[in-house]
Amino acid sequence: MTSSTDRNETLFERAKRVIPGGVNSPVRAFRAVGGTPRFVQRAQGAYFWDANDRRYIDYIGSWGPMILGHGHPNVVAAVQKAVTEGFSFGAPTEREIELAEEILKHVPSMEMVRLVSSGTEAGMSAIRLARGATGRSKIIKFEGCYHGHADALLVKAGSGLATFGNPTSAGVPAEVVQHTLVLEYNNIHQLEEAFALHGKELACLMIEPIAGNMNFVRASAPFMQRCRELCTQYGALLVFDEVMTGFRVALGSAQSVYAQAIPGFKPDITVLGKVIGGGMPLAAFGGPRALMEQMAPLGPVYQAGTLSGNPVATACGLATLREISQPGFFDALSRKTRSLVDGLQAAASAEGVPFSADCQGGMFGFFLLPELPQNYATVMKTDSPRFNTLFHGLLDRGVYIAPALYEAGFVSAAHSEEDIAQTVAAAREVFKLLAK
Ligand SMILES: *Cc1c(COP(=O)(O)O)cnc(C)c1O
Image 1 (cartoon, rainbow, N blue to C red):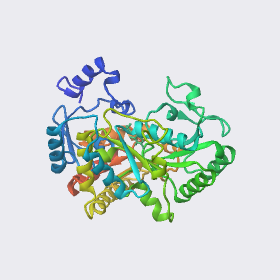
Image 2 (cartoon, rainbow, N blue to C red; image 1 turned 90 degrees about the vertical axis):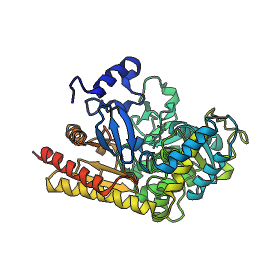
Image 3 (spheres, helix red, strand yellow; image 1 turned 60 degrees about the vertical axis):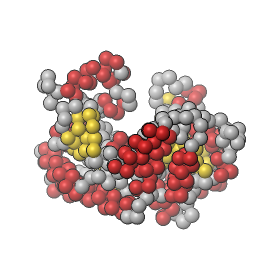
Image 4 (cartoon, rainbow, N blue to C red; image 1 turned 60 degrees about the horizontal axis):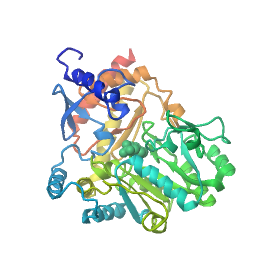
């Protein structure tokens, strides 16, 4: 729809005059898929309505936080109550303790947690803690994993293992990423080589256990086990970036999924965001007591925030975590997500479209590839014009998935069986077009 009555178009033109690209976070601009972003007017349950008052089934859910769907009554009530009590104090509150206790209850690798306002801030602080605690500078990250936009993490692989990364953004000096080593995800051989070369200088290895920023790619259990062993052997810290997977793939987060395959498995530092704020700006990082006591004001690693532990955000996060920790919540959510993924797979197969998909808890991903990819280079082999046809085909049919092929999808407790059936039916129509 590009007629003069399209309010999305009008708002986008207006936005572009005052906000770079018309958006406050790049992927929202639809540049990968083309077309006009939908400006959201309001949302409820599994749906949002755009500026033309058109309804969409929402599989983004603010990129993960809205695990209960939009406007859950208990969350709304908690936020409304909190707002009447004050927006921000810059002094401690009981609610921060309650949220910390609730988080620690479900993620036993963490004995203490510090609350911050964004995943970027949490990831950046976790690296500072790892460097401060080990007295080392070098870090490992993996191609295709996103850990927020801190300077040291905006980096792609250099020309070889002995060389460190290259900045992926203007404004990041080469010196700032000279300590960041970028490796291929799921490549055990390369991992071992990197530790053999640099192990004793490594502060940490940071990883998305299920990479949601290259659609949906799992770290294999043997690869994760090797990451753990090598970190322990060389005295580097294993940092789990669970900003997306935390309280999304399981109540115990992705680390609980790996602990099933690898007995006794635990990361050293966990980074959280998205779901723990329930849609409000809130994130966290945590780990064992001795490590977290390195943080100011107890220890030498500085970190602070005017809005950290904000009373409205913590009320929202706490109410969300209390809902999702009800017995059976994740079983029901997992079943629903699985039925979506199975439905899409069956529809693609019926139309002869190459397709592969995976899911865990309330997070899923699919590829227009015959097999699930194991690393970023393979993800990028997805035919993007075909993905764009799928994206716009679904959008035209009232189904909103991520506007880029390297992003995961999210199902909420509010999605009904009818929503899933409608989504699968819409996808089948688009697969028919793709098969031609
Ligand atoms: C979203 C995300 C971040 C960044 O969080 P922001 O709140 O957007 O700064 C970091 N790591 C992962 C894995 C994420 O998905």
